[in-house]
Length: 545
Image (cartoon, rainbow, N blue to C red; front, side, top):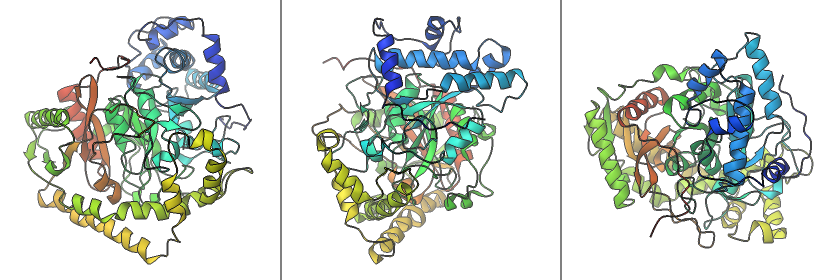
């Protein structure tokens, strides 16, 4: 059993002790997981740094590797890269029981009771996903440090039951980037600013910033992120990894600090499509705690690896959303090469296959209106599940930030909080009209229409531009993204590496209809096989001028 009893360790104390213990060690370039294993007595395990979940499983099954040695290696790498060296600042807190749980997994394996493809695999969770253990669950806000969730989030419980080791919690854009219009993605009051592992003064995007950076830098085998609009796919693009934003209702949001019950979803962030498919299968299923999951009956799978296909683009019909391009010349050049690669891999490319309703959706303001209303209601419902000492309403959070302005409001304000606080209940006609407008433009006149008219398997667009310089004073310099129509529709996306500009990753997004994850995984795995874009980061301090 993994039932863990809550204690009250000081914030990030485990990491602080680890950093002090290693303070005398000089960091020199990249530290591979294999090297870290050597330092912790794990012995040589060549090739672990970019190893897939399947490869790690094969080594553990053969006896070449144990979960404890693998976990030790990742912990050492976190100390070297996240706390020292380039100071990625992607891990908010470490699970103090990680090694103990790894030993339990090893004992189970020796007894012939391995639980499945995630058995003994270390994973990090975005810190808006509740865990009932000795780690904090804060959404990056100091307001939640002194209270605890009373149970695991459903997705955390499912990962534990699948045999995964929850290694720690990842940093994020505080409150999933729903506090201020001038925020810096990847900054939180609890942990500060996450850095991009490719070029350290560039932004990792958000709000699942630490989940993207940690996986890209090989600080864990995989991670979980959450998305309302772009919060998985944008950091996946910026940090050169694969991110699956599932259909709303395919994965449970119970125990996940919310923005919007209409749009929130939880999904995997990994280095390969195969790893993301493994992770997704462990997360799905109807959950009585989240009524939206009832829609997944007949649509969910326990094993999404069955849809992996290196020739998955052959015979597919892929539409090109030309009206979701133009973020930057470099992005467009990479996207053109990606479309050419899709065609060469045997797909029929329908170009253009524009999502014409996207402009009207953006101009309507319907999405933001819905999010403001739902956040006020949903955060109150969530806060009621925390232990004594927790704020209970959005008004409480606003007052906390005002009382702690030197730490929480130093770099940017809470304008979005204040706009949401001014909204009424979900019975307001303005909310209901905005919800209807958004869904009509995103579904019937958006993705459903274009996919159907052209008989498409998926639509592609660039995920976003190369990462911008982090700017805490002025906030994000965001040039654009392609996630919004699918976000409002509640439909799935997969972002994956498509190329590099000035050493910075740029992603391509495959988007489809409701519960189209099997098709998107097939297409994405075909693209990955045809292109092989992913490469590990180099931790450059800045771009050469």
